[in-house]
Image (cartoon, rainbow over all chains, first blue to last red; front, side, top):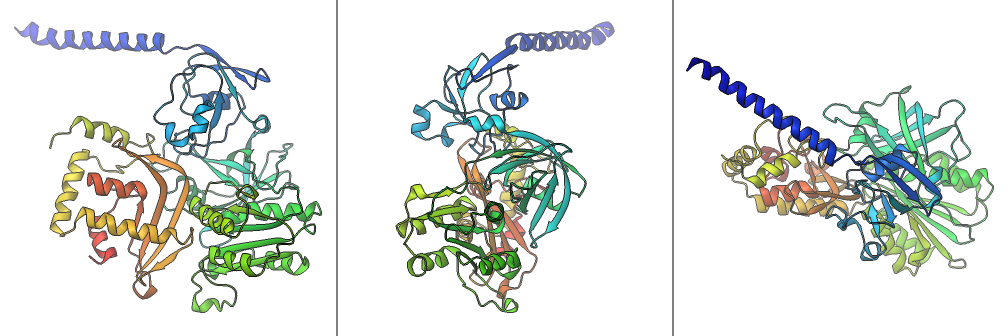
Length: 374
Length: 154
């Protein structure tokens, strides 16, 4: 009886261990896809990567960085690629992010496709130039109570080449309860001429993983990983009047664009209107520089507007939501001698509201440009 | 109370790194069903109604969205700042996806902030309304019933 008392648990334990080992071995055999080949743009590049991982990560491992605002969690819908070979049916996690046209065109989310066999894909060739930088935070400046300017130096000997208006992915390490490295997309606010640095404007978002890190933990001298450049938000080479609208950290691409236009001498080539919306005076920044441009260049018009100016602000400029101010200017002050082009940077809601105002004022949808991320 | 298979799956989806990096349970080690049961009891004690609270919070979130990312004062009592990001988040109960919109609602009678505030999101309102789930203690989007009462003046 006593012997059985000891043998029974040992036997059960042994059987359980055997089953666990069997499951582990089966898993290795069944889920071992070996190496797979990713053919990009009909043979322009061929990558051999480890199978079994999401395509987004397999591509990144080989230096091809498809944009992703959520770091591969399947929640931003940014990492689209066109797949020209069979990778299985569309996943329910992909469908909400794809239009019917994209589904018909075999567009898929690369973070949701597991690499199980050789695959052929198409991606924009600009992505071949995306680089992975280990930068050092050189300076952090509070430009408002909730926006930090983060100026990063690239490693010695490394230079960046980007078009003003593009964005980079900024990665932060695990901290507190956040157990993984996390990446988010931010527009570059530095000018392309500053080839050894990248600068970002990061606004604190309550509960935001990267923004909280940037505001509460990030230190000067710290190393950060930046991947970029991405995006096709850039100034079109026309003589159309530029109608630029931003709020908060949406200032970033315009700081880069205006400085770039100054650097390359195109700032005087066309009329530029820059509408910047904020709640009160403490939410507006770079005022001195922008007023200086307004004064220096006859064709540059800076219109800051406050939606709820405080008594102590002594604000005498336009008031109301930036969309209301924009509407008034489009109706009454902005010349229609040249075509109008819209350039927007802000949250999806802000972009939708500006688009509505612009199209209601007979601006063409195809002449309005933006990158839809916050 | 016993966890149904649906709750067991939802609780697994609520772990950090599955849908959001932080997850939905914070430092709370109770089972999902126990968290919900305790909050339902608290709501009842405070005479709060889930549907009414959800409607009120949603109307404030939508009013805040009109600020286009800038803080707006609503009815002279609340300063609401919304943040929006690209994309959607899936519900841990696997019953839909929700815009990445969140709002900080500061209670500020006569425009003077009291320090009392609620942080809500499109998804957290769905969880409150449909599942009576206010998130675990320590979760960034945990909505405390007492705070709802204070901030919303219910």
